[in-house]
Length: 257
Image 1: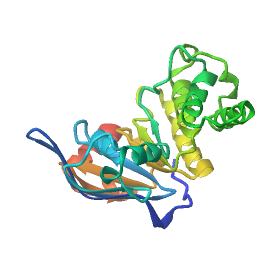
Image 2 (image 1 turned 60 degrees about the horizontal axis):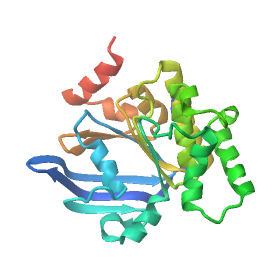
Image 3 (image 1 turned 180 degrees about the horizontal axis):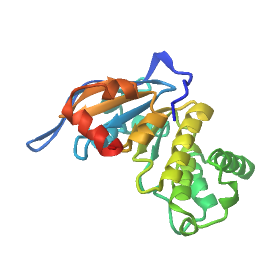
């Protein structure tokens, strides 16, 4: 499946990172990372476990502070703003967690209503209902509105998790291993959904994945994190048109004959 060309604005950056460094005790995780995410772009971040992909997302969202470097998200330098400003910024960033992070004791409707009630206190019941119905329609699960998470498949739970993120209309989406643990057909559905979210909601997204089929399907640009820095960047074909054995090993693991 080839990625369709979306409406990316290369004159505007949703995220800009320069010289980012982060260490834990004696372990250097990020060693001078430079990365830009453009408005309307799907950017896939590839890398082995422990290479700092999740650390990068935590720094972008202000959950971790960088040791050095510049991290600007939607025009704000994340580690320089006040806690109140950071809370407002986080409302513009949607997180799709690997485990979907749904509340088991709540119905699908209640799970979707929760962020609205918590963060948008002036909405009427009709406005809440309309928002819930809109995001459920976007992920193709309108019929699941009164079901419990335990009644849903893994792919359906993933879709509802994405719907709950979308209900606050974030400008940026951060996907953490969106196809992990799913069967191949459901993976295709999730890949298509990520592209549909980009098109329908005009999001700028970072997708962390080990799944190269996902990367090829959703990534307008691919960036491979190796040894604490982005060593290869470009289209899927450009990234893997290299003699670098580390990149080739990653490719062969996914697509070996």
